[in-house]
Amino acid sequence: MRRLGSLLLILSLALLAVGVRPDSARAAAVIRLGYLDDPGSALVLLADAGNLFKEEGLEVKPVRFKDSAGGLASLAAGKVDVGAFAVRETLMAIARGDRLRIIAGGGTDRTGSLLDEVDASARLEREDRGIVVILSDLPGAPDKETLAKLVSTLIKADLLLHNHPDRAWSSIARHRPAEGRNFSFDPDPDYYRLAGIWKRLDLQAPNMERSFLADHVYDEIYCDALHDLREGEGEADPVLKKLADKAVCPPDCCPTGKKKRNDKGGSQ
Picture 1: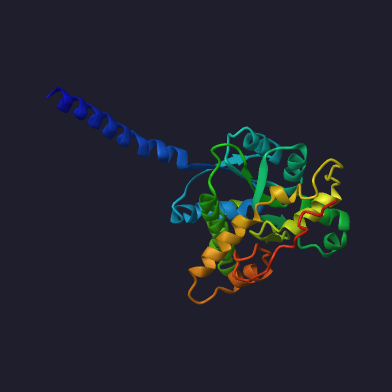
Picture 2: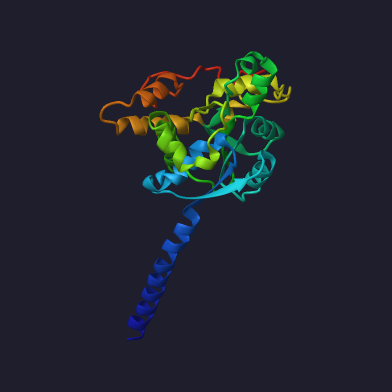
């Protein structure tokens, strides 16, 4: 009888533990996503406004920042899990040794002025302010599958912007670019574009490995997300096809069959 009582007690404790665990798991599954209050963050804002995160089974809590410096500090401290911040500040933080990995792209201000477009310094400055989406590579960070779902929502948001711009901007009207400003949106992290900015900012220190920047660009996540979306397509979306055609992915990842160069990371 005593043995039966002990077994019942153990079973009760086990059931209690099982009852507590799901709530803890749900709390841990919330992704804190930092973003700038800026039109360049449109993909993140659209994914939230259109419930695209929830469609992917993700619980995302957007956290607004007034500048990239504050957002990157919170990311490095583990106060947010993922962030959508400016390219320049992000690359400089990576060069300083912050444990960050770039997983997706965002928006860049192109402006509609012809004069401004031929001004190389102004164009490069806007490029440096373009948005990239970054993972805080710390213990407890979201796993690869979760990140692929997160990036899938950004690709879907990009499709919405291209295919239904009026509907998309009406859902985040406050962040619509002012008249005369023409933002370009691209969810691809685009390593080679980042390498160009890295080189221009002269961030490759002599003691760094040649692949230093490449090791901080997690473009496999983007490729996985793009592949999964294309696998689920019936009639191919032309915007999705264009994204896939220009993606440079590892072998057997993207449906394009394109391969990364073996010397990826040559930004010296």
